Image 1 (spheres, rainbow, N blue to C red):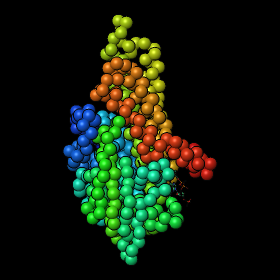
Image 2: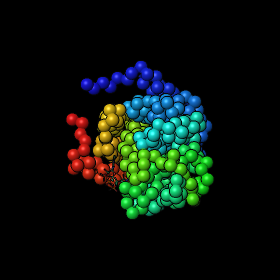
Image 3: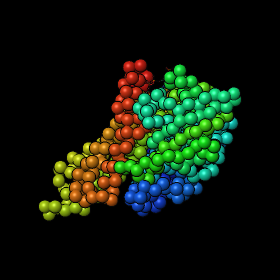
Image 4: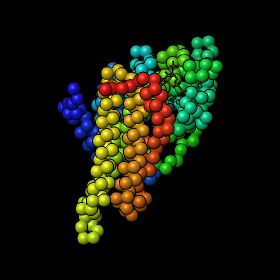
Length: 385
Ligand code: COS
């Protein structure tokens, strides 16, 4: 029933992603981290190799990978820099609501042109007053005849400054709370969209995060995805998928931290021998590896559920919490093992530790994800076995 072997096609794709990470991301990861510039050239190259729109069906211009394959490839692409890796994979979250709720012609109309460029999409949910409480959003899409007029602002939008397509959530009926939220596919060149502040961050520095303003942005019925009031559900369904993605990214971050720690434990000599000879280091490496194995298993299980059209909100939230808390611990331990040379600015493990922190915060803080998981268990949603 359970088979962990990769198909020949998956093996080829993972090798392609690993080579891409080694050859295109690794050499420049620290440079992008220092400068905080968007990795546009790398996204362009990833697009040419079919690594940018992995989750989008071929009919709309993507590579058409199933969820499990997409997540395995995501782990490989995030190994050398999860900020660049996430810019490459951002369409997974931002296109999910359109794929789930859009009509055939909408998917072709909005995803097709996006897949021809390297700029990808962005997921416009969060506002200054609506972070964990996503349903409290104030951005409105007021109906005027056959059109909707959008006003409001979104913040902390990954790839918000450059993306070709915006997956926007706005309320079409403020009196109905979350049931009044609707989803829209919005091409970037729609008049009235402007980019505000670009954030300067502790980690994930190559991940561009921006404010976006909507001033009297006029949309038609063709932009509405899934009907009025369907937006919150679509946003949550997209986040289920995104949280599994974050689990795969966390596995990558941890694997890199472990590999750096093993390398150092072999090379670094103290008391006349490599520090890897000491039991204190064995224990740390063993615990790091166990957390990676468990996290990998969790994203594979949730991906398997998604490939069978099974709802995995509980599993995705549990996996996200587990793997991102694990990533914080594993990267902190890697800095501990490399000690002085791991704590210095501009080193690989120092970057990993800064990057790991955001994993616990975005796509739902781990506190919110525990709420999702706990509520789901009480409601009898889940469980595989
Ligand atoms: N799949 C399908 N439907 C879902 C769903 C999911 N994963 N999650 C929620 N829904 C549905 C619910 O079933 C409910 O519909 P019904 O009333 O018809 O049953 C509706 O959506 C509202 O859900 P809920 O009552 O759980 O909404 P809340 O306002 O209580 O809040 C939380 C839900 C807190 C879980 C949500 O706001 C959340 O995830 N916040 C974090 C947002 C986030 O991750 N932001 C990061 C953005 S990307 S960096």
